[in-house]
Length: 327
Image (cartoon, rainbow, N blue to C red; front, top):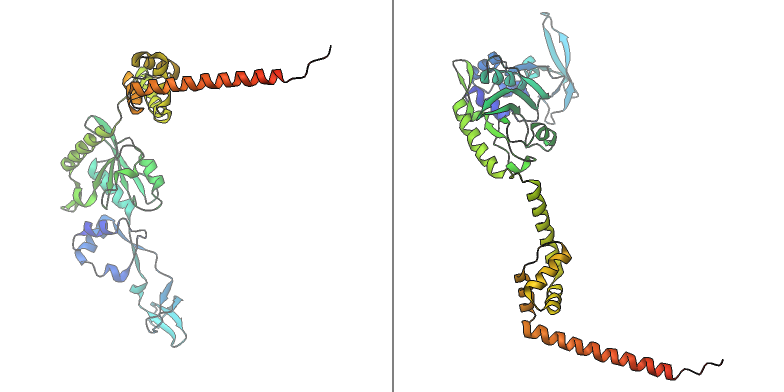
């Protein structure tokens, strides 16, 4: 990596922003100087423990500071083999990526004099607000949208589809947003370092906003009137009930009324949702057609008559066998 900003974007979503001195010394010196000038790279607190460079097991010990004969501070760790081992001062230095400084620079590049507000420490910043496509939009910078604990950050960004969110990595999948996803802008593709200053490709971002708005328009549900909502609810409830009714009610209604239309009207009144005559016709057809339904009805009528006669005979027989009542 030779570009100063490329170094920052590669490390921006790292859970730990601390860097060892040996890692920083592997970067090109001009990039280190540029990052230090911008405030994106700054020295952190020195380490207070170090691994022994002389022992194979690399045991870690507390660093002790002693003054040398020349009055300069020197650093040692205790060692069971060598009693004490000197550690170079540079090996104790640590550096960190200052993500707050990155947020402030971006806010100034988007709108000179813009105010940067931290929403969640080291995770989410508001860089200001802009009006694009006739809509006032929050401009945000986020870290770790793909981390396991991203829920609170996503909740703060919201799902109204109007925010503009800068991220260092790839855009997260749309399904992580509770409703409509925001416009997500990749920092490496939209932010440049030119003549020592941070610049933002606003024209490219505007194109992204247009694409995101068009996609969200297709996702946004159409508002329904109260009458339409009632009709849709009744239709949905009717579809569920129809799926559970089976053919019996439709066939029985046809048998009773002798007409698809009359059967449909009776069922609509009974169930509280519209039943078409085609639904009745389909149920009758599945039972073998009108002739089959009528034969089944006649057969059922005969069975009911025979059963009724049998019950009458049983009652008469039972009555004739009762002993006479004495007065």
